[in-house]
Image (cartoon, rainbow, N blue to C red; front, side, top):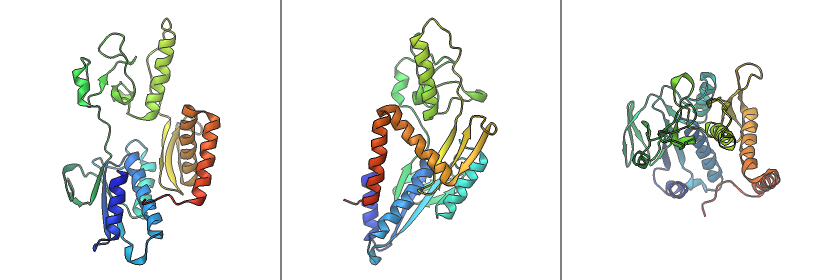
Amino acid sequence: FNARLTAAFLAAAHSDQRVLRIAIVGAGATGVELSTELLEGHAELSAGLTEDQHFALDVTLVEAGPRILGGLPDAAAGKAHRTLAARGVKVLTGAAVERVRADGLDTAVGPVPADLVVWAAGVKAPPENARLGLEVGRLNQFVVDERLRTSAPDVYALGDCAEAPGPGGRPVPARAQAAAQQAAWLARVLAHPNRDPGPFVYRDRGSLVSLGDRGGVGSLMGNLIGPSFLIEGLLAKWAYMALHLDHHRAIIGIRRTGLLALSRLLHRRVTGRLKLH
């Protein structure tokens, strides 16, 4: 994707049309965050171009559902929608994709012209899963019970590859926090096979979405000031950055995470975010 995007930026800077059209299919966290990253990358690039090389960036976010960020509360999704619109992103909802063409998309609400199409719509497991002898669901995920057991004895599945029963009769969402909770629960089961921890219960801790360098939006859960509360702007952005660093801490430890954060901070002081070589 990076190579395709770089080539498209270069082509647009030297084309007669002076516009690059990008369509992103799927308005979950990935699609929303990518749209703002593209806008900021374009702004960084434009600062280093001559006047006759400037080009416009046309970003369209295409969502089949009735609104963006379906995993967040309406208030948070509405805030993100307004922020994207204010920054120039075209947001189409109820626009299920019917066909992908070389020059764009055909959707339920009409055609969307695009020079580059990015697919960011959901998670689906590989079809090879159906040939392994285990029961799979509609998305080729291994069907598991409330104890993460597949249709074969002593075989467990977790994370994106598992279809586990969740709240309200719906499957547990394919999200990082779900996989982390399942991993912690299963580790206790395997470490103490003679103890019964009870069934796995997924608990939604909330979501954070970055809307660029100076903003974000999120929904946090945990009964701090109620069952859930919304954060936005710099507070949400800082929380997002803290969560990102915590992911590093879990993998490489506190000391290396601190050094990594310091090196990134120093690096941003001396270089731009986008390079074309």
